[in-house]
Image (cartoon, rainbow, N blue to C red; front, side):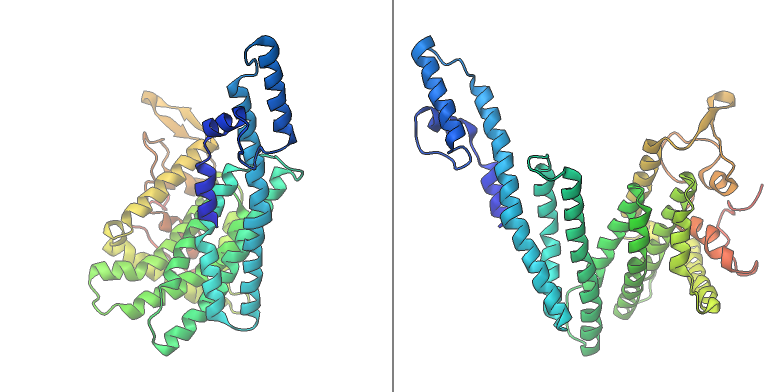
Length: 384
């Protein structure tokens, strides 16, 4: 329905509609109404009196385009969104009745068509109706969030089931891992700490499943496979590193708090220390082997870094002052931030050091004794 709607909408030929309009032919439902017939009669009157058409073609096609948007918007609300919501409710009923696989199939399809929905809704987001645009956009955001949440819950139950049965099944966890990687990064770029706080817990759980998922599928422990094996844990820590770094840049401690809340085991502090030691071991392996930078995800990590630094540059939060020899010097009281970013502004947007190290030094080391703390390859974290 979404795909066909897009085709029909984009195929509207305004010149053809105008020709039909001028020649009293049957034409699109969009303008087959009293408003346009009055316009047509007015144009006839112009031609009879002035011997020419005074109302311009551009004016008429402009009106048609506006009404097309209104018509499409109504169609989306009454048909596409209503159908989408009905299917969501059906998927939720399946989940409640413990038909987890069937529910997964429903929410997986809804998730796949979400991008198409985003395109349509972004194209027709003008306030052409009664409700404010902001409210409608929030409604759509909530609508898609429900789909992601149920897809997450279904997938974990289905994954556990098929893993026990040893049957072939699509890479549900890998798919979810990529979705939540994108969602958590986007929340940082949008400075939405509430969304990040809500999603980071689920992302951590998915990264654990993905970690064991890959571990069970690898038999040859060569460096390339080790990179694949470690990547879910390292990438989770990279996202946490970006959150902590952005929190320090924007001077909002809620970002670090969200990361730490997701790490801490309030009922068993020793478990928190054990988890920190485990994560430090992954960081150490990556530091010593350097395997992810040349792995299949290396280019993606470079893009994350560039996108993050472009986001920082666009925010205009960091303050630089002119120094000697034309250098621009970072002005901050945060020594860790200064050591990580460097005192001097670089000519291109990139980080000096791996972002997972910022997380390891800032967060993990807080829970560990001196002998267990993570030490970076360049020891950038040390006072000099």
